[in-house]
Amino acid sequence: MSENFQDSEKYETITIESKVREGVFHKVVKEIKSGKAVSCSCKCWSKGGKACAAMRGIGVD
Image: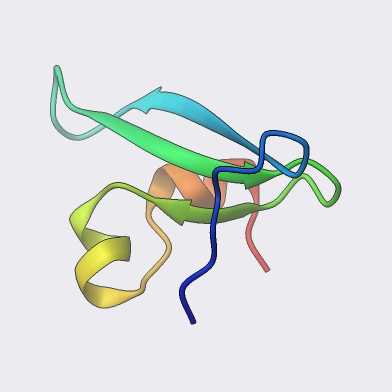
């Protein structure tokens, strides 16, 4: 299930600072139509497939 999030008409990338680690930023990909987060650059998402606090702050399905 590898989606292409490069389509700027469907997705936007939002940079959110980590609340836990100072100086660390999450790059959250948000689907414009639904307003929901669909991906993140953090280890929680990339390694474990779990939505991080930054993604939950935006909203996830």
